[in-house]
Amino acid sequence: MKRIAILTGGGDAPGLNAVIRAAVKIAINEYGCEVIGVRHGYDGFIEPDGLMVLDIASVRGILQRGGTILGAANRGNPFARKTIRDGEEIVEDVSDQCVAAIEKLKLDAVIVVGGDGTLKIGRELYAKGVPIVGVPKTIDNDVAGTEVTFGFDTALNIAMEALDRLHTTAESHHRVMILELMGRDAGFIALHAGVAGGADIILIPEIPFRYEKICEKVQERISSGSKFSMVAVSEGAQPEGGQQVFARGGDEVFVARLGGIGQAVGKFVESACGAETRVTVLGHIQRGGTPTAFDRWLATRYGGGAVRLAAEGRFGRMVALQDAKVIDVGLDEVLAQPKRVDVEGDAIRTARGLGISFGD
Image (cartoon, rainbow, N blue to C red):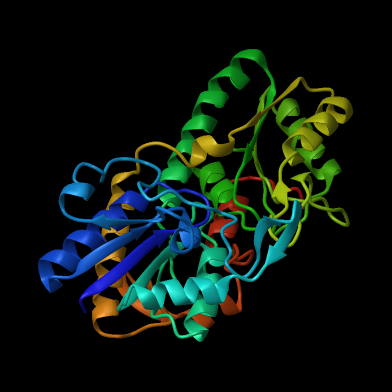
């Protein structure tokens, strides 16, 4: 193994730089291998100045930094790339151009750090002969095959702290405080932060809710003497028989952007329950800033594991955490089915036992 590349795709997540740092240092220290950094996801292979050499000096001091020194692109899909031709916007497949660039670089491996979208593109490039190794990254924790993705723990702690802060003002002013959290179609952030932050109501995509049940819980707390309520809402939550709420539609390149369910719930609670209500959308604050110790630790182990996987020639696979050990799983297995909250699992059972309502 003489030369490898590493790229970060999709939305940013705390711990990306820790993966890059570990991969570079281990590739150089253990294998004497050159490392190429690919800027802005897969786009870096086909754009001018899209590549940079990564050495020990270039990754010094980045362990604690959020974001990614390589940049990320959550729309950089070489199989469906928007471009302007003859003054008209078109979508074209430039994957062969991407593969040709990789072959020209004589890369022994390409380490792809991303969520399900980035990993799916990696699998498609692997089918075209590119030596791909995957690393699971997303604050949503919705990548199958691994118990946890790096970035999740940091986002969870930020969400929990937000609930803690909202709790004091909710209690002071006798309000219903609603916190809308990220997660897409998985409710891990809302569930874990809601339990850890003392939420009274948690709404997640896996359990369709009924507005009247939310109101019942709020009224129940008022009757018992608790004049405030805390609600954690996943952005992908939806009412029973209803639809998810989107802030922006999608197309063949852009994924539709979820957002607005918190406001919908807040409007109903205030009008139907007669309770003063405030809505906070935490948004991209969950993605930014310094990663937690756990995310640094996990991302570092993933970076090292990815390099070793590449050195062994085990391509088309992804590093993962299972039973506290870093192992590897096939990308086909990872992408066969997305990971979702187990509605019959102990986490949901425990939350219900605590008296938390899921609006069902």
